[in-house]
Image (cartoon, rainbow, N blue to C red; front, side):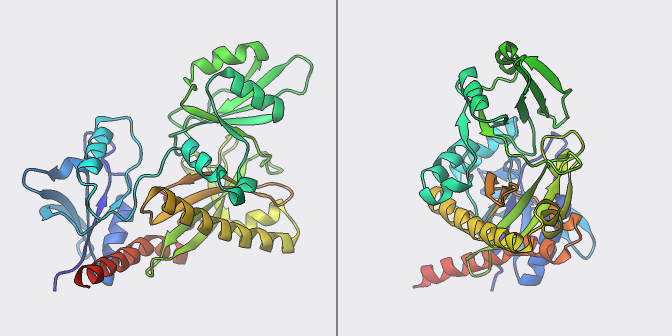
Length: 371
């Protein structure tokens, strides 16, 4: 009997066909083999629609070598494609549209603003959401700065801390704003101190209208001045149920307004970081339990709202009072937070769970077909 086949859909990073997560794919292919799942990697550029074939990338764990072979379309597709400003991304959109009838483990999630609105419409999620507004003009930013001493400006389609600004209202009588952040290449920008009347002209260079949201800033600076938050990974397991795979603390680089690892941040065990922030052990345990419950609840709701999902990463903040805030949701999470803290078991689980879920989904579809 033939094996079920999973195709990992990704995008080349450049015209030299470089892939970002090759070590992850190698491990998933090896783990898939142990589970009885045939796994290969492909991009939309590798698809020959006229032949109905894919020039797939295959990895042989016993030799450690990659090779190519023409393959039929897989039984299931695991979409790992992140947003790019490239012709490759437009090719991806065409692929998703043309082959929408295929069985995907996960579908694209909407942008940050749309997801925020969907969650805000549900009463039980509102206590976990920072005050957030889509920017239509400088007035939206000014009004938020009147309500909150610090705000964050985030691109609605941004990832990895790119293009994020933090604006803090100066407490002095001069009406100045302190601005820090990262540009679209994740580089830390030179801190600026601007008179209030100049804020609009400064932000016009960032093209924020309709493309950015402005969000309440939460005080998350540790005694050493570095910001911190938590990355929670929630995944479907081999029974099709949502489970928390793990939650890891992240501490930002010096002078960074974000904690992203790609921006120079580092990972820490959640317990260790939480203890630095909140000393009450009972409160720490309550935060753990509440955060896990929130993660599974959000995943279930978003899948019901937007269609098939198999994993989500939640970026969570915890204020000094122990209140949990959901900063954003990422549908294409990386796993390196677990390997950075040496948690080999959670790292392996993060790779294996999508494979186990794929096998479960395959068997469910097969049973339904034979019924």
